[in-house]
Length: 397
Image 1: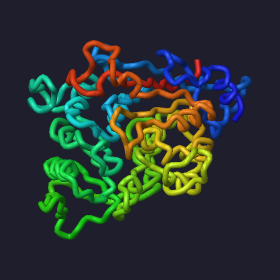
Image 2 (image 1 turned 120 degrees about the horizontal axis):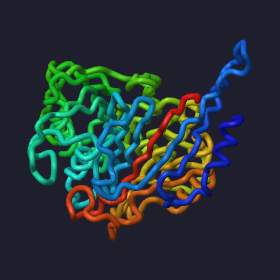
Image 3 (image 1 turned 180 degrees about the horizontal axis):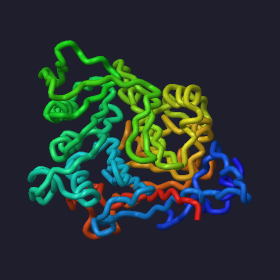
Image 4 (image 1 turned 90 degrees about the vertical axis):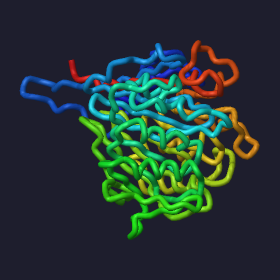
């Protein structure tokens, strides 16, 4: 672990759940040796990467320019009860989920955030103000982690409003209107590549809610598997750690889990990956979390963790958190109850603190928004407690 871990210990604050802005940490990279000595003495030692974060409560808080080379941005977007996470590099954009399960929460809130973060795009359906943009911007990768409304309700609009090059979906069918709308968006994304863990049917037809959706040959349909590594941009890539297309009893079991490399910093996107039924974090590992620890122990060792299933006790077993050992934990949650329970669970927040993670949450100001005006429609619980994480890979001086 060496000097990098020592620097983390020196820099890391004592795990508050609502940290202030611009807190700097040095992510650990125990697998990286120091630079070799040269003929004139010790070689240069690169400075560790820096990670800073700050709350985003209104459009004015967001930077307008794209990240500089060697830097990246991770946006935890406040969508109320759901998940949407945007990763930006100087040369790519990745959107992991975009959905809300709150009654009456308009999916356009995500579009308003994207318009502020990367620029407006598309026609009058693509912003709450209803105004068209002069150009159609690109999001390189859009991932639906699994087919649940609170993760995908806005993705049909995203596909309509932006040029999307690569679309990632487990292929597990959910017989729901939002998923049919998503597939219709895929079908209309001419020139895109559609990636699923399921083999394409011979007739390229999927039936949802009694209606067929045909994926035309203008959309390339490809199959992905665990272990696949996809280059995102310079010094950035994502590796697929969990891929399951078979219809499991709960679509959470089909979650696409990604390990994202941003220079020397690692981000683990867990979606709704679980360990099993609700239990204290001290319970035994199971389900996807057990699979990740058993098969991808090195890959899940991450600096930033998107906490599974909105901080529910179905996920985040202590053994899993120990294997990930995150410095920063991102919890996207809202006011809607899951089976009568409001997330995140206190036990999970405590377990994250126990491994030394600083927790960033989107749910603490759902009733009273501190920003004015918040991002997106004025009504609804989302839009005022997003987080922007900056990653800087600092070269040797």
